[in-house]
Each structure stands twice: as C-alpha cells, then as structure tokens.
Picture 1 (tube, rainbow, N blue to C red):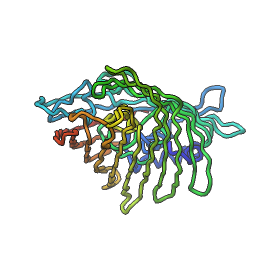
Picture 2 (picture 1 turned 90 degrees about the vertical axis):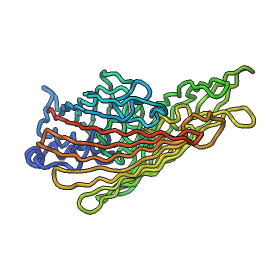
Picture 3 (picture 1 turned 30 degrees about the horizontal axis):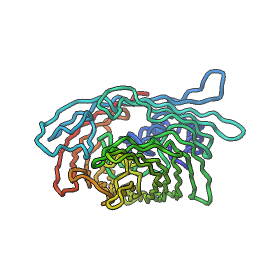
Picture 4 (picture 1 turned 60 degrees about the vertical axis):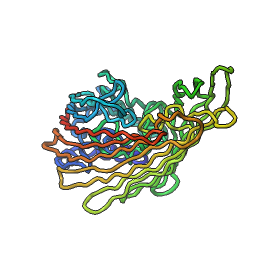
Length: 409
C-alpha cells in the first residue's frame, strides 16, 4: 500500500463500503499490476466489498488473490534453470533452442487486516505466490509484515532503497533489469515533515553476497552489520518524487595460491525516482540509481557480489553498478491500457574482470492489457533484451508472453 497515506485511505474506505462497491465497477488506473503500490491499491479496491470482521473482535480483514496462466514463447532458451521470467543476464551467447512453455507461478494469495487502537490502527499484510527464482513451482512468501499506523513497519516487504510507486506493470514477472527491486526483512520508521513530504529510514537484512570466483582467486563476502536505507519522498495528486540512499558494510575474504586476504569494504548507493501524471490519465515512471557494492539491489543479477580484485595492489575493491529505467503507461479507455519502456543496467570498469563477464544488459517491453470483466484480465507483451560482456560482443533474445488472470475474492 502506498506509504504515507494507506492507513487513512483504507480506514475511510472501510467506513463507506456501499460507495466503494459501486465505484468498483469502474476499472482502477492500473488493473493488471502484480507488485508495488499499484498492486496494493488494486487489491484494496477489489476487496473492499468483501471485508470481514474476526468474530468477537474489532479486527477487519480482507482476503483475496488470483489465478494466472502465462503462455511464453522465446527465441532462445535462457541459460540456467529459470525460464518463466525474462532475465537478460542469462541470455545465451551460443546456439540455443527456442522455448515454449506455460506457467501458473504468478498466481497469488493476499491478506490484509486492520485492528483499531487508541495509539492508531495496527495492520498486518501477507502476500505469497508460486514463483521462487530457481525454476520451480513452490509457495513463496513475498511479504509478511506488521505496521503501526503510518509510523512503523516490521517484517518482510519492499526495501526502503527501492521505489514501489515507480515499478511499471509488465506481464513478465521479473520486470526491468535496471530498476531497484528487493523484498526483505526490515524495521522502518516514517516521519512526516510537511504536507506531502516524509522521511523514512530502515535497518534491513543485508543478505550477504554469494561466493564468486575472480581470476585466480575465490571471493566470499559476509555482512558486518544490517544495511542502512533512507528515503525522502514527496507525493501530490500529480505524482511523486523520491531520493533514496543506501549504506552497506561487508567483510570480504579472497583466497588464492598466495594465501588469504581479508578486507572490510563499505558500499553506498543513491537513487532518484518518481512518477508524473500526464494527459488522458497517462503516467511517466522513471528511476536512475548507482552505487558501489549494491548490485544485488537491482532487478537483474548482473553483479552478484559487487567485489573485484584491484588492478595494481591485488586487494579488493567494490564494483560500481548503475541502472536507468523509463516507462510510459497509457490508458486507452476504462478497460484498455498499455505500458512500454526500456531499462539498462551496467557495471563499471572497477577491478579485474574476465572478458566474458557481463558489462551491460538492456531490457525493453511493450504490452496491451484488457479488463474483460471485473474479475478477468488478459494481456499480451513483447520483450527484447541484449547482454554485452567486457569484450564487447553482444547477444539478444526476444520473447512473447500471453497472460490470463482471474481474480478470486
């Protein structure tokens, strides 16, 4: 739900169910979102008429979800086990077979509850689907948190370093490569400082990076403390603007023929993002982010460790990873919409990297979405991706996806 205004908005809506149920016959601004603020607002809107109260309490709760079937055709089968989402960094550089598949892994179940108290409402939220990013179909917990009014969030949800209001609606599950996207355990506080303005700060699960091989050495990293994230946010009827910052501390160990080297490295990142409401209910969404040692916060695992060997001294240094995303959402009519745009993610020239290591990926998509009935959404999406390694070669892939979503409440 949209940070800064969710509690007040839903409290008012729960008190006006008759009006909300009637208004629900109209399609929301984004009726096909599966994650981010748009999905949270869609969930609230669709479930208002089904609100229930736990017997013997004043706790109100909403339960809902959807079944989704994706039909996917790819020019090249991606490297690795994951095939049901478009991950550009897994584009094969050699010969590869075409790939055709059907998937139900995006199907989702949701829970929202609200309990009033003298200190303000207490909220809980759960979201799960069948989409672990390892190619399997298994229950996956995406969000599970508790929130006190607008002031405090504890649990697993969207990272403070990302902007859940700037996520474009793609039928592809993973989405643009260069946008920041992480859901993890955190403790986050929020303070409103002026009309439309708020500051949020959080301690977040660092999820220390995986072991990797660099030249003749193997490198492993572990977190020395929680990640620190903060954002300054402005919201109005015309859109929003967000400035976010991230700080990480990692202990890295490099092991090679000459022994073991240990080093503490400090990672930092910054992001600017937002959305602008335009004519005909259209929306422009954007983000630009960069940082050293923050590669795992981006949506494509182009740089998993964020650590490289220094060129001269043989020590370790952090790799800079940068991403840029620009998408346009067009509302053709009440029940028709399109979302199109592109995103890029690239790794700097820091340290020693093998010629076949990826330097940049580009992701582009365009779709057409239609709400056939209040509970049935269909869409088609074309995707294109290009991966470029350090040696300058490139490989591309193309995918077409058809999705059908049936809402169950």
